[in-house]
Length: 217
Ligand code: PMT
Image (cartoon, rainbow, N blue to C red):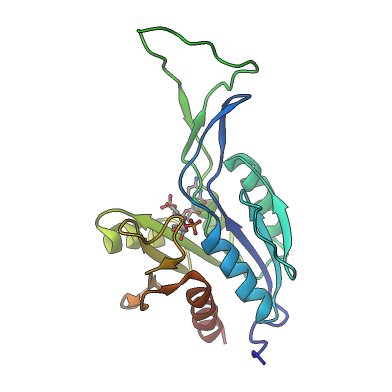
């Protein structure tokens, strides 16, 4: 039987790509399937934690996890913030849209003709950065999915967002978004990057929690 090394820990995890409405039938989103965040939720629950998953992707069954469905970055922000005070660990595996349509239409947009269509976007809140700034006792974890300059970009996010751990996630060649396998490097403050071997998201999720539990022990 697996050791309950996260027993007593309240953990909030986010998963999936947010959906930002353009009109009642269209939205902007990304390729995040929610698999990585869901695997992390299952692994944390199996290790004894009390887990809530705040997700845009609900297709998977999670017997031991409380699941809260959201669609937009703003809804995700509200859900995470309201649970932050009581949480021990918050892990943001979601791919949160940085921008949303400024004025979603309340009717289906009509074809505009050859001149094209322009949609104005406004910036979404950066949930992870807000948590990093506001944290008191919480341990805050983020991901960074990058197509280029992976470690440099992830290192910048670790520092700027005041995370306690940033998980650098290369995108492409069957890894990252929507794949079953992943390759990640753990970036801890003031330490050398810690690459983990390529593995299934399910196996990686267990390793990530074991490493976090060790650091917090
Ligand atoms: O869902 P899967 O298909 O399994 O894919 C998993 C994944 C590749 C989506 C996941 O492992 C991952 O890397 N998630 C982060 C995706 C990303 O591109 O993050 P980012 O670099 O835009 O943001 C960095 C961090 O800040 C993330 O923890 C993100 O959740 C958070 N963020 C970003 C923007 C924003 N407005 N608010 C945030 O909280």
